[in-house]
View 1 (cartoon, one colour):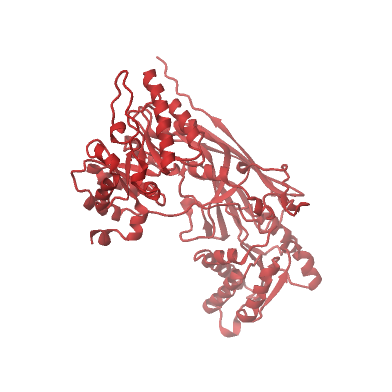
View 2 (cartoon, rainbow, N blue to C red):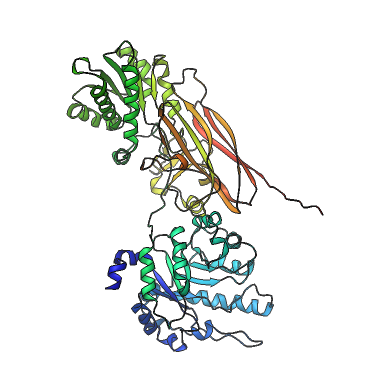
Length: 624
């Protein structure tokens, strides 16, 4: 009854609270009867137990000169294999210290650690917990680096004059920043009081946290600040003499567990590829974007409509119409303007021309024109860059307003400048473009998770027929398979391209700064090639993995859409931030200056980005 009122079964499945067996409650008799121990903890609503991998006697043994450690004595047949895997998390024996100053103990520890790791693998346990005894543990890292290819290890970090994150990051680097499996359990330390330092942990693979029973409320408050991954684990330590379930369930019920996934995408290339219906459908669900577009179109219509000439009609082109949401916005804007500023005998009417190159959505547009728009639109199946020629041949009028939604997460990365420049020769000097301008932004970020995801991603053999990066397309091979050809060569490194990501498990190391700005209409035909240097001062030790990319778009006058955090359009869902990765994690310190050079390159074959960083170290010299 208590569980039902404070924590739903669904929430409890995600919380995963475990008990850490210690010398005060774990007895040797449980080594051969662990089911009894587990059942008792289950009655207190724990999901799993962290238990010594070699048994209680071995796990809490104290090394003495010349004495060998007790043998492993935790028989696997006392539980079925799936129960071990589900309900037991292995603890490496506390006395094991591969980096001890005592060479005899260090050598013995390496041997005995291998025994325990192999036994853990034999039993099919999914993870093990080991505490770092030292801030620098190269010998332990060497052992774990070999084992991590197949299993998971949770690390407990030691106290040190350096902050916990630095200890963790150095050890992670010794383990090759392994792409999966290496997580940590971190005890509360002073740095978790400083929000600036705390935010770095959001960029790390936090999988489980040890909570002292008597500080449960304080630790729960920390959990509210730190994101908890889906199916993350809480490890509770303390004396088993106390009933932990009331405080445990009360705090877990208050903690907002976020189970968001972390999608990583290759940016869309709608100029080269025809998008699917489901992609259009997702974009059309945005509750904010089309409201702002409607407001911008209505404002532009008002500015034209209230001229001294009081025009009876305006010509509006929707460029890259997709399935037509901007057409609907335009018709609604016309209706709103007439309701406010015109009478029935003096209504202003929009002549709407709908341009779309995707032959599949043309079917939808024709249907919408017939059933919804009352056949008032002219549907043009063409690349918008061909409109000057087509309009001249067919006698279409020049537009007073052009409306488009061609931006990517990095602003210009879906080639909006090139698309809109193609129609510029057809425009009037007075033509209004919606949007009028957009600026890309970048900010340095830290995220081991995204770095690992990018390293792992890549097209599978069966997806090679799908066009990837570069515009050379795919080529059919003699055996019926496909090969992607890149301008850079046969292969392209995962780190040498821009991605789109839902930024959740990351840490921003500085505020975003503007990068490239494009204005429309571009009557001067200014080149769309760009080059920019942007500098950031780092205010904490961190591992720089790359840069987050954003944009701010001015639709018309003061009406804007933005994914820049400080000016974010609340409720908008059409764009995730871009990620501009570096090839390796780059260690920076408090006070360091990072300068990003990024260029937008343009030639007859395509558009691409090139980037690198320049790192300036600030040295503080004290003279006596």
